Image (cartoon, rainbow, N blue to C red; front, side, top):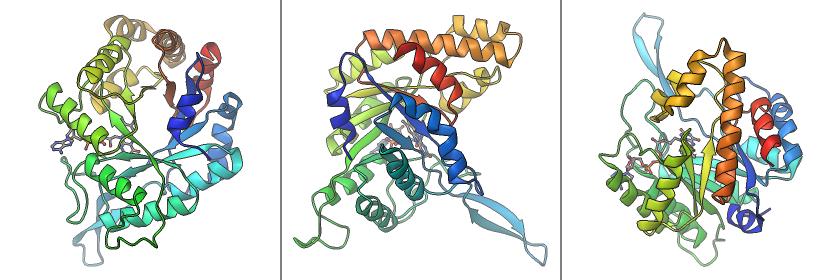
Length: 319
Ligand code: FAD
């Protein structure tokens, strides 16, 4: 198994094809998910990101009718799925690890499991607020920002565990990725502050960045230029989402705080149905990829939602 940075170093003139998948909803079967993503293995992605979904809180009526807040998980964790990917496809999984909904001790336990399995990469994220709340609150014994989580992972890489620092403890050797936002993270007061916070993540030990999805390549090109001006010199992998329904034109900007280019918007609005919108989404993404390849990006990273059809339509046209 290898680190993402090692895979990127091996890329030739063409960037690497990589994907992000999400674990199935509660009750889903791992075999079904592996079958869904199998068609994408034809393009041999050297690594696959696996998202992590934090707990949610719901109100449940007790026997006396009073409401009680219950913690629930909608999707399983990453350990089992990452292990299955590694063994079935011989591909490096990149589990996402969050600050949200977890203590530092629980994070250490998760990292110990991942290290024990031979997983070489992690994507370190803060995560969003727990539903139904509307702001992020770290656990009392958790991390507030991704740079702190990166610090913990880096410590483990140096053999420094939370409550033990002994020469007899083995060091982990994770390659650490972090998230970046070409259109600014929605909570940051301004872009400059966001760049400073991004630099903190890199200074803490993030070795590469993966961007939030964007539909306007110019935003990515400007972002990379500004990162370099802020002395952020690690590889910046563009994250790509292929629009597949008309509704996503409204939903994606609201969820991910991004702007849709006007000409793209107009084409999708005029599409007669979802099938036509999907075709426009595919063609737009192919053009995005072609430009990004010319810009010599290290990888093209697709947010697949564990579905292969649209991703394969785009990837086959550009790889
Ligand atoms: P941070 O880097 O901690 O930044 C969060 C905000 O705080 C930013 O506004 C930043 O400017 C600010 N900030 C950072 N450090 C400081 C500081 N020290 N002091 C003050 N302000 C600070 N979410 C999931 O739940 N599961 C996933 O698997 C997942 N995968 C993702 C993968 C990618 C590639 C991306 C781009 C996002 C992903 N997300 C995921 C969403 C992500 O968790 C959210 O966008 C979250 O709101 C921010 O996470 P972050 O790691 O970028 O946070």
